[in-house]
Length: 257
Image 1 (cartoon, rainbow, N blue to C red):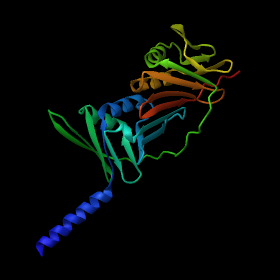
Image 2 (cartoon, one colour; image 1 turned 90 degrees about the vertical axis):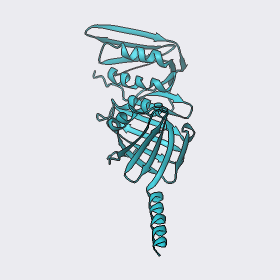
Image 3 (cartoon, rainbow, N blue to C red; image 1 turned 180 degrees about the vertical axis):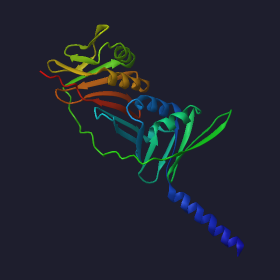
Image 4 (cartoon, rainbow, N blue to C red; image 1 turned 45 degrees about the horizontal axis):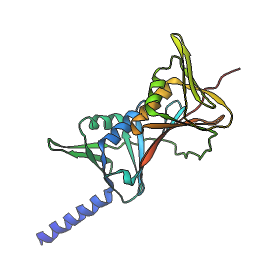
């Protein structure tokens, strides 16, 4: 009789564990590190939406000026299983603390209100349990937009340009070339590149330099960056990679006449 009771208890535990577990995957730690470093200047916490297709993140900075969208498909993981859609609310600082101690591949497993992160190497085994947090974020969808001006640059050059801005704002002009100009108390800069893929005339818009510098941290995902512009709508900065993309959207500065 005792054996039957024990067996029933084990079956019940297995059933409850299966019910609590909604997502399990193995992913390169570098992908997570690059993601955290790319967006932690914009937000402190994120919701990761998991479904059968992979991970999706959308977040808006506190000033409602910049939007970030990150997507990685299931083929971007070493292994991936999601039995039902779930949302993982995470503190980026907590994730960053964990990632300092892991490298290579890491296992992620959602168990109820906890995300288990594990890593095994020749030197050590480590496991971290991160408490999920409730993040009150308004759900929204990014409309598909047809941009009139599209430019592709080396990510390395984009980083260099964003880091060499003198003023609070940077003017981006696209015509036959793309030009970045800035002016501040200590000087001015003007950088011109080829790489215009699409244009209809000329456009010139101003953006906050510090946000462009934040976006440049996404360069770790791709050797090239694509900038898309149209009058009156946010600039899109996109770093595409084989299994997904990291996109940033930035509202232009409004100049008063």
